[in-house]
Length: 107
Image (cartoon, rainbow, N blue to C red; front, side, top):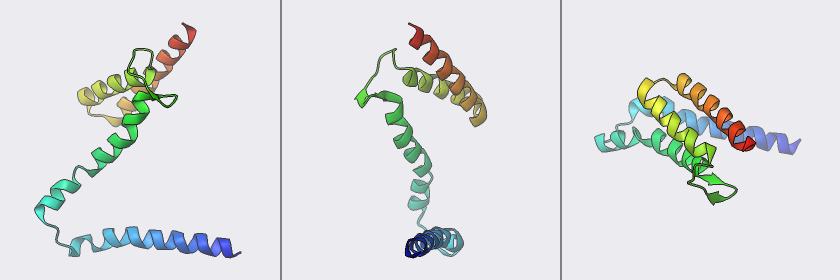
């Protein structure tokens, strides 16, 4: 039972910490340079997560045409740039990945 209290307590603490930034945001005055820097945080975080997934295969960097993830990443970037639509980008990326994966596996 103690484990559940610890889990609930830490979950509640995490919730309050995150809520504090949302609830107090209107009362905080951030310098302009901080606000401009915060604008780029989501892009930086997503790039740090997605980048290694595109180029790493079996714990090694694979920048060849045999890496379907890298090819799909290039296609998805093109679709995202052209359409500016997340849903279409995901659909085209998944379809491309499935096609390339099955075609490369059959080779």
